[in-house]
Every structure is written in structure tokens, then in C-alpha cells.
Image (cartoon, rainbow over all chains, first blue to last red; front, side, top):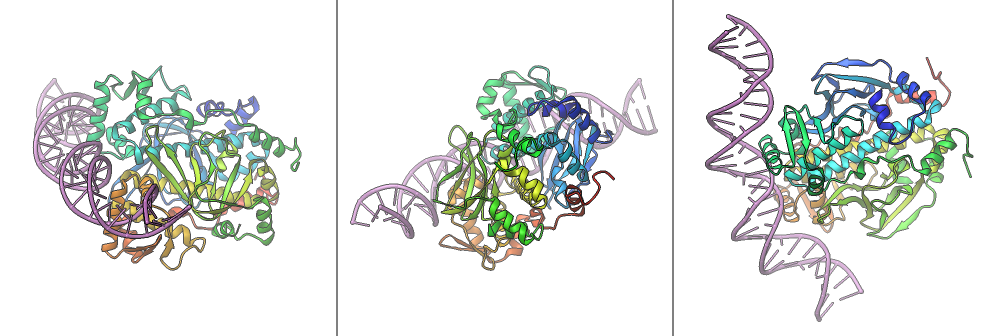
Length: 255
Length: 255
DNA sequence: CGGTATATTGATTTGGTTCAACTCCAGTGG
DNA sequence: CCACTGGAGTTGAACCAAATCAATATACCG
């Protein structure tokens, strides 16, 4: 649960007992092989999946075989929360590398909500920030050029990984083939290659055996219009705190 | 609250008292002029907005003026739920036509959750289905052709509007200019025009003064790979019901 | 009735795709 | 130990879907 705790700490500082609760809540931690489906499209989502180590992704196919990758998942990400209210998944979620995962059972939410409302809020916060990332991706696919999309994705990944200490400076592992990048960015493999090439020859990035280094974060971010505000890495606002106090019975429900 | 109630009924049949509660919960109903910002980017989201009548949209600009429209909102949509946990909006939400709206105050969530957990779940369901629509839009922008995107959007809108009785057969009002469609679909205005033209001359759609009719839903849906499963118009699954019973104290929290 | 926003149309350009080689591995099995 | 295979990356050339530019037509609006 380390990665998730690290991530949540941007929203709340979890108390010791909350951390322990969370460990217990995400029942059996499991190792999963690379290229394994954890959630399959049209199947019910039995539990939400917490990614603890490794890389994974969500994708969908069109009937004729075109594929769109919806998100990368990195440690600390929680996938499939919506399964608690929806009957089936509208994406497949698969590991890329070997992973460690934990599960949040849908039927345990009431317990969590009542015993640990702060934790419940923090997990919902994860879901909301993820939604913000979807919106940002929409902007990329709709209105950014190929080069900008590539640059933006690299900036985003660096930011997301550094949030959970998954980076060395501006360098991070990216265990992903070019056609995965292409299907993420709505481009062809060849063109992804050419964009990376261009960024390389402009001394903006460097790549070697599945690792990337952003040599000039700032100009890359500027060029790609990368604005990290959408990660919402800010402590819970007062109205959240207020609502939580109410919920815990420490403030009047109606004022 | 009519539109919202109609929409929620696809998930739950609301009891009379739940309907009344909802009316009261969405405090002052308000009329809003066309082209008014209800949520502004970077501002805190003071309350979630429930759209009761009219059309609205969410959008973002890139620094150089390119615009991406993220979603259309039609009656029954709830926008800004995430504001309860996030400090600021990462989009602007504006009316297109005159609208009627209501507001859900963030600080009232605990009350709702404790008094009416079923309602709370139903509203969260709205948020999750909306997320599913984002994902579908991602597929469009990433992997569908221009013509497919246009067709898919029309199918989606027909489906969403019929969900709240906003259609006449396969016909609905679409009070939106072509450049709004363009910024939604990641295309240029001119090209949107040409796609519509083509669909028209293939006798798939007909358009007249801001209204659209889908003359052949099925082939349009087929061509655009429109698969309405992503609306998740299905009653709450058993595990949701189970969790709600637990929450209401009618079932043991731990079993 | 003039003026601004929107729709329509054609000509031209371009960013990105497609196709087809070719290279460079890391297995793998004989 | 080496030949063989298949996946990934690299490169060039031809092509195309959609953008851009520019002009006209039309509708709406005070």
C-alpha cells in the first residue's frame, strides 16, 4: 500500500491508524504476471484494483481492431472504483509488466465510510483526479499536435511518477513499446517514432533501454502546454474538512 | 428536478419521499441566461450544478487559443461533483441556451449520505456514467475518423436525450453551432460541415433550424461503432444493493 | 437596413498515415 | 554454439484525411 499512501498524502496526511486500516482494507496483496487481464470489458468488476508496483493500462477496441488506450496506470492508482455501482466494465485493464496489486471489495465501502470517512474521501479524491487526467487527455487528442501530445504525455508521466517517488531526477523507466504510445496518443507507431526522434534531436529528451530522461522539462512543458494543476495535488479544501466533521458527528449536520 | 429524477430512475426507482428529498436538496432552482459561466476554470467549485433545462458545455482553452469542448450537458446532468474534494475547476462550464439549474452544496453531502444513502449512490452513479462517456469520447478522438465522430456524437446525443424524454422519435433539437461541434470532436468547422453534408446526402440524417433527425439510426450506429452499453442504463447491481443495506444498518457490516 | 455570426463552397496545403524495407536485438531450439 | 525466428525500432516514399485559406451566401438581430 506504500505507493497509494504516498499518493494520498498529497491530499491528507494519513494517521498511523488510517494507514494500518488501509493495509487491512486492501485485502490480499498479490503478484500478477505481465500481460494479464485484471478487469475485462463487459465483465462485472468484482473489486477495485489498487496497483502497488508495476505498470498497467486500460484500453478498448473498436470492432475493426483499432485500439485506444485510455490510461496508463502506475503504482498508487486505483482502477475500477466505478464497478461498485456499474454492472460491467467498459474497458479492459491489463498489466504491462509484472505487478503487485491489492483489491478493494465493493461490499466493504460502507464499513470504510463509517469507520474511516477521511480515508473514503481520500480514495474518492483519487478517482476525481483521475477524471481530471481524462479531461486533459481529451484536450490532447482533440487539440494538440502529435509532437505536443508526446511531450505532454512524457511530462505527465514524470509528474505522476515523482508523486510516488518513481523517478530519478528527470529520468524514469517507461516499459512501453512505441505502438502502445501510439494507441494512447491517437497516432501511428511510425509517427510516434518520428516525434520522439525530433524531441531527441532538439535535446529535449533522451532515451535508452526503456528509460526516458527529460533534459529540459521547462521548455518541453511550455511547448506542450503542460500545466500540472490538473493533478490537484493540494490538501483537502475547507469545505471537505467541514463535511467530514459533520459526517463524524463532530459538527452539527444542519446549521 | 424532473429531468434528474427521470435519469436516476434508470438506476433506481426513487421512492416518493426520496423524490421530495431530492427537490429540497437541490436548493434554489434558478433561471440562467444563455452564455453564462456557471463554473469558471481555476475558481473553486462552490456547489455542484444540476442542469434541469437547457443546454450547457464544459471546455478548456490551450494558451494559444485552441479550444477543446469536453462535454455537452443536457437536462439531468450533474456537473462539478468533484468540486467537493478539489480546490478548483479545470474547465469552464457555461450555458449555451437559457437554462434552469439547481445546486447541490458540498457541505450537504454528509446529510444526504446518512439520511438517503440510496440517493447518494444514485448521484454518484451519474458521475460514474459521465466518466464512461469521457472514455468513449477518448476513443472517438483517438481512433475514429471524422465522419465516425460526427455520427457517434449524434447517436450519443439522441440516446442521452431520449433517456430524459427530450426527443421526438429520432429527432431532437441541437442548439449548437458547427464550430462548437468542431471543438467537441477535434475537427475544423469546415470539415464538420462536410461530414454533416455527407451524412445528409447518404440519407442518414436530416437537419433544419437547429434540429436533427436520424433517419437511419441503425446504420449510423453501426458505421460509427456506437455501442450504448457505456451509458450503464441498468438497475444497481446486487453488490450495490448489498452495500446499501449494510450502510442502512439492515445487514451486518462484517459478515 | 446594415452588421455580425454562421453556413457553404472550392482550391490548396499539410500533418500524419500507410506501406514496405531493413536493422537490431533477445530468445530458442537444434 | 550458431542458425532461425519474431518482435521492436528505424527509415524512406507515396498517399490521404483533414486543415487552412479565402470567398460567397445566408440568416439573424438590434
